[in-house]
Image (cartoon, rainbow, N blue to C red; front, side):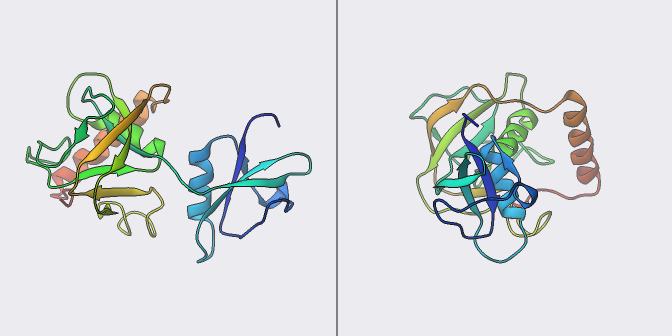
Length: 193
């Protein structure tokens, strides 16, 4: 293995520990490893390890993850994404009380693809400038805990970069998601804000 590979788990490992392939999914995709760690059985904190070699050994640990914001707005590094603008989501146009972001690139892709407007979707790397809380639209509503690592804040998000090589969902998956959101709208289920 010449590229970086990851293993997500709730088991605490040390540098040099062996990782058995039969019970340790290994991936080159950090988001997949984070997802695996957060969905793993147990109550210990999720951990993501860098692994290499044959047999696989732990060579490092990922301790920080980037935060992403998906949108159709064209922005630049240094710009702020602030609450108080018209929300991209919801049954009616209203000003958003929060800004939303995620640690998962896949979740940011959904934000970029489902945002209002006709322009291309963008995924920005962001850093929160104030207190953060779990996004109640997803946390414990659709998933145990917060495996999508979706958050919100009343403080602005500062753009530090843009992901330009992200892979979007298929047109069929996007249409299915839009139909599901429309069904929720018809049932009167709306996003918390």
